[in-house]
Length: 196
Image 1 (tube, one colour):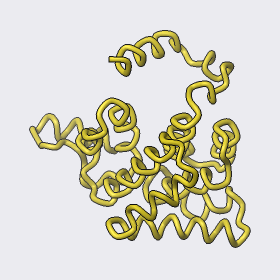
Image 2 (spheres, helix red, strand yellow):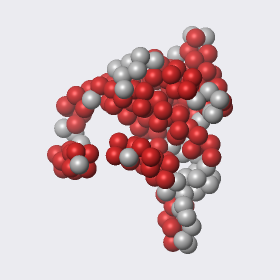
Image 3 (tube, rainbow, N blue to C red):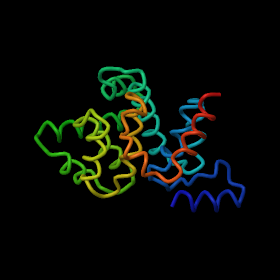
């Protein structure tokens, strides 16, 4: 929905062109490469696809968590919760709901099912948080996320970004990278963009 509405809004001159109704994780997906180049432009990038206030609040928390992973902080999720507790109480509470489900002995699959397997927020955010809280390594987190079912790509974008940001590209198995069509060109383009 977000891309289709963007195209319609763009054609009609709506600024920003994002959809106020898009509750998907599309804003995060388009913002991740922007964050690496210029973190001050993250919200502007997200608004290309969504202007939904709830989505933008989650994006703010996700960027804080990602930043904490990048800096190697010991408890990156908890630190972001503490930092944004007064500004984003609803999102902080959503994380606490995940922590409670896990503390009550629910499996990752059960937690993902509880909060929703679709790509919309807050469920996809909560599923990604649950995965990050139960899997600290890139490969095990990606695999567990896939086994969680549903729209694993929305959860995977965020959790993969966090763990790869902390551990570097070497966290991604070479055999996974070799299966990506045009990986050499993708890596060359990324090096050009992010080395300048």
